Length: 82
Image (cartoon, rainbow, N blue to C red; front, side):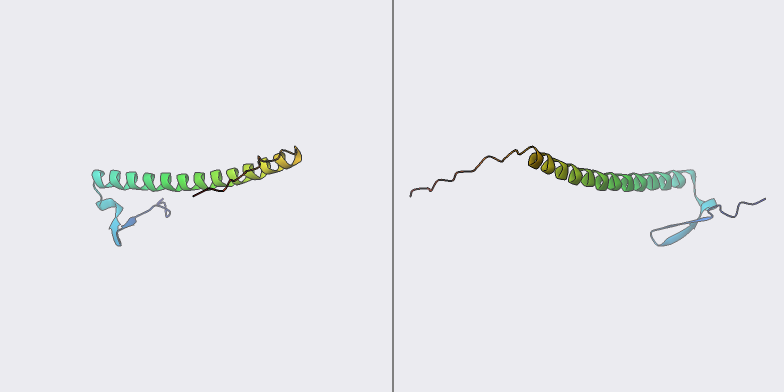
């Protein structure tokens, strides 16, 4: 019985190629490219998750500073004489 979900062609650089026509070297290159794209997508997701975590931690720190009544150091600026 034939698997109807089997990929028979692949599109690259606006050209379609039959999988059966690919050499082992071409198959390896496609696999490396796909793996690189997956890694890039995973890294992009990691960046988004890290940014969200940092935003939450910033909010938590602000709350802690307010609840613990920790005041920022007052900046005193002096005029420069010319």
